[in-house]
Image (cartoon, rainbow, N blue to C red; front, side):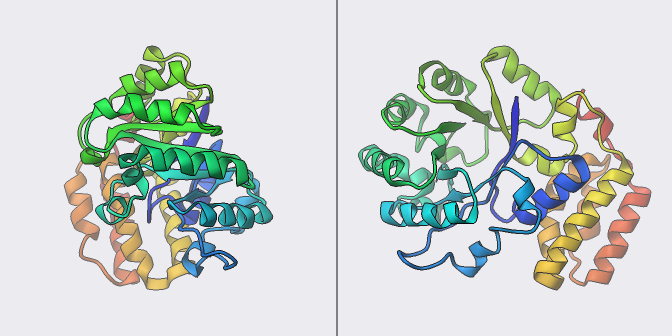
Amino acid sequence: MILSLAPMEGVTGYAFRKAHAECFGELDRYYTPFLVPPRLDFPFANRYAKELCQEGDEALDVVPQLLTKNANEFVWATQLLSEMGYAEVNLNVGCPSGTVANKGRGAGFLRDLAALEAFLQDVCVRSALPVSVKTRIGFANDNEFEEILETYCRCPIAELIVHPRVRADFYDGAPRRKAYGEALAKAPFPVAYNGDIFSVADIESLVAAYPETRHVMLGRGVVGNPALPRMIKGGPAATADELERFHDVLFHTYEERIGGNAVFRMKEWWSYAKELFVSPISVQRAVRKLKRVDEYEAAVSKIFRTEELVVDRIGQ
């Protein structure tokens, strides 16, 4: 089974994939947080360029994800990415953010299926790279997915990654796995699953219901528990020492890139990782108001010395 890292804005970028591969072993594939394509004949904006062609990435299978509804800019971006050595590109049709969706991008693309199909029919022919799609199953309700799936099935995409929620859900409620099953049964291309895989039991339940599953994308589950992919493959949960080393590599990679702002970026990680501890509220309180690097490092050292982990029970 393919296990990949989901694109999560501000969370699963270069620093996270570097730390995870170094501390817990490589995943089969890594999807970048979304990149906005540049205008024709221009390079990627600096903030996106920093996410691409990083040291160590050449040893990993990294798939850039693009967020756009402009076909010409999408195709231009694939040419740049091909020259950088990437082998695939992914289209974001799932971002639920209002600022994104209101412009007809991300999940907002699902409100105009004729435009989405025209876009895919065009870019899949002209793209310098195979095009996969990460999608939600509707904008407002589940009933939209039948037509959405038919639209995708008419397009020559390389793979469809299904996050079985609608845009209106954001990340609330249970994923509707039945929609994923429908895609598995009907699609003429490979189909992957993404959504609420937080434990070994979660993926076992998915595979039991849909034994044809071949690719599972992990998001919040692996951010909060970086040992989860290893556990899925039959390995052990993380030890306190492993988790602390992972934290240190992640933090220092952020420091090298953004200096003292690394503290604020790490607070995002702690919002997920706190659940690995018996007292997540205590962990959150220990870091939430810190701004200085020295204060942050002292607080984190204390967390790993005094707070009890529950990670050994996550896979049960």
